[in-house]
Amino acid sequence: MKARRVLHPSDFSPASRAAFRRAVAIAKAERAELLIVHATVPVIPQAGDGFVPANVYDDIERAIRDDARQRLDKLVATAKAAKIRVRSLLLDGTPAEQIVRAARKHRADLIVIGTHGRTGLARVLLGSVAARVVGTAPCPVLTVRAK
Image (cartoon, rainbow, N blue to C red):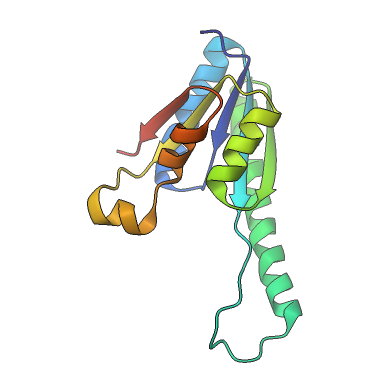
């Protein structure tokens, strides 16, 4: 399979870093473009928080987006240093849905995603973005487990 566009979703975790290294290697070997994506989940007020002005939530979301943008920029710089074509997208919403949507929209040939390797109750309670992506992606998905 010749990959023209490799999509790497990152949550900036150790599992993501392992998948990022693999995605860079594949993009370089295939002379493919690397598309790095990160999805931020909106901050939802919790019952019992008391009165919190709306602008506080806006400030929190802005800080989360700014931090994510800085982290994405570092990944882009690392990929550029490896001499590959790269760009990034900062998305809003449920990570698995946004990853699959981006893969469709940008016609990804391969998704390279990290997995934490959770099993049993931890996976049931915490869910698995990687598992949901594997089940709904429009292209092959390579999961990379953190060491």
